[in-house]
Every structure is written in C-alpha cells, then in structure tokens.
Image (cartoon, rainbow, N blue to C red):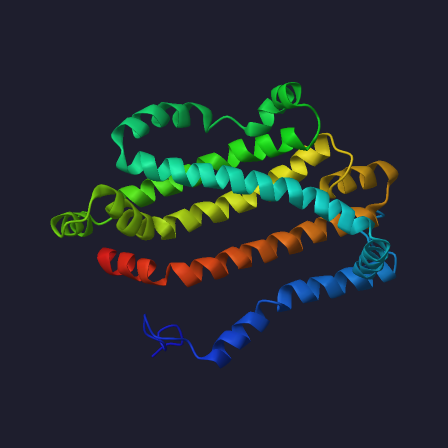
Length: 272
C-alpha cells in the first residue's frame, strides 16, 4: 500500500504524522529567510530588500515606543467594524433570500449588477459622501464584504436538505422554528466559507483605503515609509498585517470547528 493510501478516508492521522507535516511546511520559508539574511549581510541585496534581522530590530523599536500599537489599533478598529457590519448584513439578508422568494427577487438583480464593480473604483464617491475619515473606509469594507457573505449564506440556505424541512413541518414545527433550527445550522458550513473570504477581503481593503488617504494605520505606515525610504518600517507593517490576518483566520477556523462539525459531516454524507 502506498503512503498516500496508508490512512483510509475518515480515519484520524497520527499526531506524530501531523507534527512532522507541519514542520516540513516550515522548511521552505525558513530556508528563504536564511538565504535572504546571508545575502543581505554580504551586500548582495538591493536597498529596498531589508534584512530580516533589521526588520526585527525595527519592529521591536516601534513596538517598544508604542507607535506600532497606535497604528494597529487604528487599522483594527476600521477592519473589525467593517467586517462585523458587512458580514452580519450579508449573512442575514442571504439567509432570508434563500427562503423567501420576494427577498431573492429584490436582491438578485442588485447583486448581479453591483458585485462585479471593483469597490475601490467608487472610493472617490465614498470619500465625497462620507469624508476622508474612518467612516468612509468602514463603508467601503462593509459594502465589499456584504457580497461574498450574502452569496455564501444564500446558497447555503438553498442547499438545505428538503427532507429535513418536510420532516420538521410534519412534526408540527412552524416556519420560524424551521428557519432557526434547520436552515441556519445546515447553512453554517457555507456561511463560514463566506466569512473567511470576507475576512481576507477586509484586510485587503483596510490597507488599500489607508494607502489612499489616512493619518494613522498600518496602510498609512506603508505609504509613509515608501515616501521617506524607510523600507524597514514598510516591512514591519506588512509582516504585522500578515500575522494579524493569520491569527484572525485561525480564530475563525477555531469557531467554525466548534459549531460546524455535525453539519459538515451530514453534508459530506449527503453528497457521498
């Protein structure tokens, strides 16, 4: 039996195997960092490619002074609000559209018309309507995140097994109970997929809007560092965004794994 087939589908992979696979995934990035550091030490890198050790030193200096956390707080305030409002509205409207034809008929042409338009293209209009402060950036993120979460919730609710709905109705459940206890739990796997897409999109738009106009934030740090040729500070902001985004995604996955195990398994069985 080949190594790929050593563990049949549905069986748990040994912890030792999981541990080794995770460490193997670090070999390439660690090797690249070592080559990067050595090449920079011997002056073989362009000026804009700062050594990892210099980036770490700059990160520690900015963190110790508190400046880095000021920018993190400003960015995360906008990102968290934009993501929360956009995702909440997208999920609620998507679920309703999946079970109510009038809601679907109202939103379907709007989604088809507006979704393909890059939201960054309407930034000048957003700035004109809501000003250049945090509100305009939150509005852009809210609008952009609404679409992927709406689509995920809509198709998640439409994919609910009709037998479960009919069984609940025959058992005496009303439509509200069916919606709360069957439709929403069954749609959770798709909803969380949409939330992950929206989460990543919120970080992209957070940086994009702050690059355009801002007086604080990680995107502002990048723009300011480019103007002053402080490439070490630029890399500090980029690495910080990556670390925060990674932690946020892991947290969302942790929440998903606590709520969606049964639903995901039932869907896999239904499609198997």
